[in-house]
Figure 1 (spheres, rainbow, N blue to C red):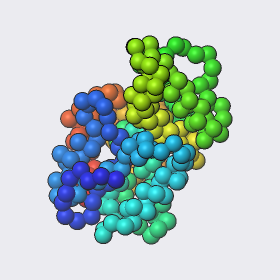
Figure 2 (tube, helix red, strand yellow):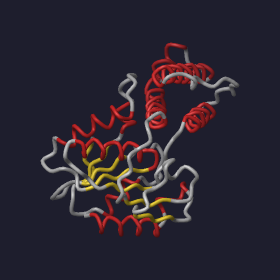
Figure 3 (cartoon, rainbow, N blue to C red):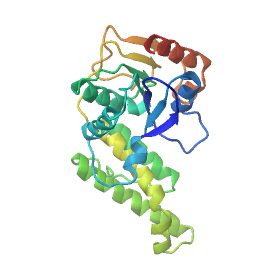
Figure 4 (cartoon, rainbow, N blue to C red):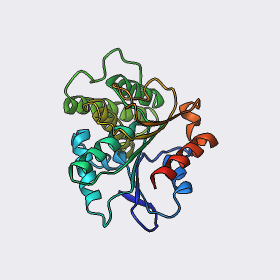
Length: 255
């Protein structure tokens, strides 16, 4: 967990992923909107990139909730972005079980399934020039077994790509280690979210979302949820002034 900005009072905690691109992140958006409180970030992909151990979404949520319980003041708000929505909801549930109920805001939420894991792995393999494969890429087993197979596929493809560009196998293994860990961590998180039980969604959850097909949990939003549904597509979502205003309006209700 990292500190993005400092302030007084109970902090806002955002569950988000660091991007390699120059695209705006939800953390940057919140930094511009939350000016008087500390803003903390939970980045499960960064944390998973330093381990190959399989961690379920529930185990991740419990570990982060334990960290948040050590704060001087419980969070004023939990914010989950995109695929991190599942983890934000699970952390909120763990905190509630510990006697610390925290409101939740979800921004462009997504709820992965194994098809998305397959699509993400296929896209990563295409980006490094790996040949197409008819096999299921290791997604037919239990979570930990599937992840071991996914890591093996990634390692093989990354090393092959590096060797094809003139490196020795030893050099390729060394130079692709960090990238493989990052790719593996992302897929490990998405797989943990895909294999998690349906999330518990608080009745007063705030949601700023679009009409993407995967933007709501299978059981739908509670009838009392506070929803803002925009027309913005996911790639342009965080750059929209209307979305920023909707997020700001909900923050005003919560903080």
